[in-house]
Image 1 (spheres, helix red, strand yellow):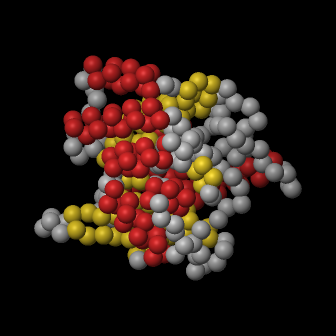
Image 2: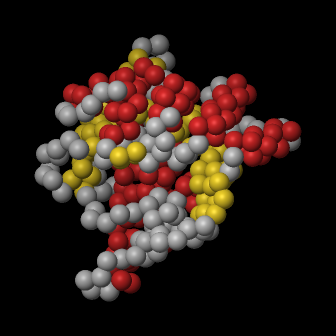
Length: 306
């Protein structure tokens, strides 16, 4: 498999977020990963201190021009995550559209990072850019409930609402939509959170088929950074390896997440000591130590077809 991904995300010197969270797992699974670092920080912003630089839209354009001049701008996938600048985001969309003209089968995987739990992480002027330009260019999107609601203008208070919102997102462009977390009640109790997925595909005879799934994921009592970036990267990988089976792709994605998070929390508690809250440094994802789980995850969760 010679499959090449262009990943435009943040970079940290220490720890695992953005490209640092996505590159290693994708490479382990056999993907070539070309990275453009939208920011270069010493560490993620959950630490007490951080320093670094932010890439401008012009700098992004210059980098892409270099790739283009050498005629090596052929990609199978584009992966993007957190961005907080409107002109940078619009430049990303322009690059995706140009790459799709060169390779119409290119798949754009977008994590539309806007916020969570009712609070925005990015300026509000990014919402219409995501809604009107980014999402229509995307093939796979991984919003949380809050982001899915912002993008569609609909609220989700039941499974039926969630299905309607996913169908609305399909109508905007993406063939695959995964709502990575929601406030919907799980039949397994409040120790679980509900994620939902929907995939539309065209059969060989031209008919449209939709697969919709629900996943009940055990909650973990800790704050991790970089898990969303890992989720989007793993969904890219497992949908590539199981192109017509969202259920299996999501089960493998969630299982990788489970193993990495479990290893991380076990390590963090051990290092912090009894009754001590682990620090951001101790809670950095145990990515390298999870190599075997990334390559071949033991399935810990079964998705339910709706």
